[in-house]
Amino acid sequence: MSSRKIDILLVRKDAPVQTMRLGPWLLYFFMLLMILTLAALAGGGYLLYQQNLALNEIVKDNRRLRLAAQNLETIVRDLQDRAFLTNMPSESAPPPSPPRAQTPPAPKPPAAPEKPAASEVSDKENDSATTSPAAQALEPWPTTSDWVDVRNVKRKKSGRELLVYFDMVNKKDSKHPAAGYVTVLLRSQRQGAPWVEAWPPARLTPLGSPENPKKGASFSVQRHRRLRARFALVDKEVEAIEFLVYDSQGELALFMREAVDPKKSDR
Image (cartoon, rainbow, N blue to C red; front, side, top):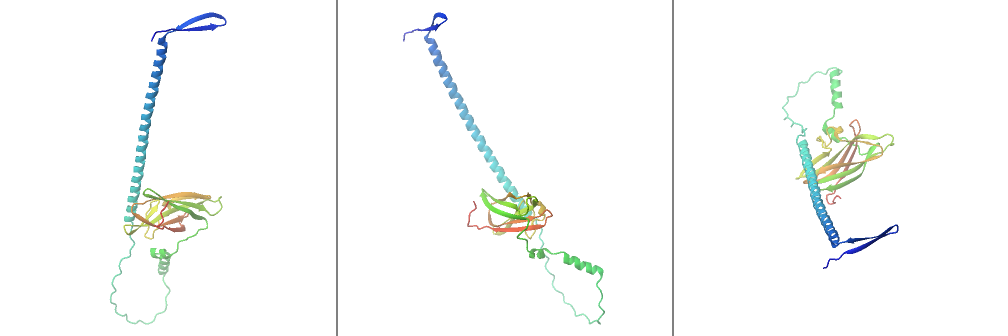
């Protein structure tokens, strides 16, 4: 290849014609500059690709850690529920003592009727005022309320958990919000034995109600409010879901039970 020079004429109206010559080395310089630019772009793209891969691995690790934390939380909640049910006091009555042989009392002359003492009257009033758990179990729980209601109950399985969505609805004027506490009970079978657990976790009485109703989820509703209960599903066969709604004083205002068909799969 013979070396040639390129003549360039620069013409201006207000100046004389000037001649400038460019050698082939300038063309080589432009080619080298383009090659270096392409190499820099390729290197930058490779670095961006490696950073993208590293970020994807970090996102996957964070997702695994979050799932592990959720599983640990589920296991801890399950252990707490077991501890609550294990430490639940049993109120079984002691076995009756065998009857003793009694001798017939000797007949006494009839006496004038006497008025009962004040202490006996007060004892009878106290006995009638206090009711045993068995008597309380016979009392029907309110299935309707004039100020609050539970509606739009939906169930959803998420991994090893059962999510229960429901709406707390104020049946009165929205200017007067409905406030109180709600506890959701999950009744199921676990290894052939009945199993009951509450959300939020709480100690239950033998009748299946929370010992302290104010430990439930508090709510204050003007019109309606969406709530969510979460239960662990390890080896349980769910039978029913119960809703216990209490007023601000801790009095039971509404009891609602929804049976669960095991043949129908939850969404």
